[in-house]
Image 1 (cartoon, rainbow, N blue to C red):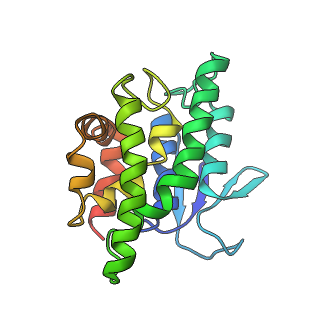
Image 2 (image 1 turned 90 degrees about the horizontal axis):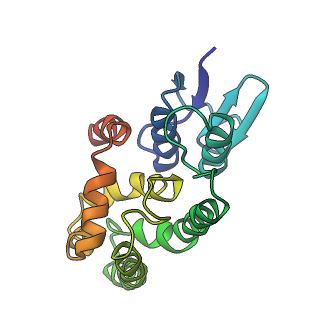
Length: 190
């Protein structure tokens, strides 16, 4: 039975889950939003019902650890802790400022771009020492950034990414993964 995801392709949270499912090579069915929990995406895998994209992705990565990419780098406590650290940074420091690339209020844009710039400077430093945020292997820490960056790269502020050589190289790498390309192409149609 295919995993059921209730969501919308334009939603960065839904896209985050779909990229994870594709990375794992899992069959899924995307169902039009009926918002059973008042949140999207909502997710059903047998008897398990979840919402919140990052929780869904952790569940998928743990349940299907041996299928596809080990997105939690679970064979190493140190690497796994780094994945968790950078997922927290994404959720609390990156997610909100990166959402304002299209905001109509110029003052809000500048304030959020200043915050995002500081986060991206930290990323630039980190990525000067490793290929991915949590080390040398792609993980959920990287994947969780993709949906917002797909939209952000379409704004006039995209140079915040491209002007930082290590961040730009990281984006070029993670955006070219087959799962990312597949879901990004669908997002780009919107």
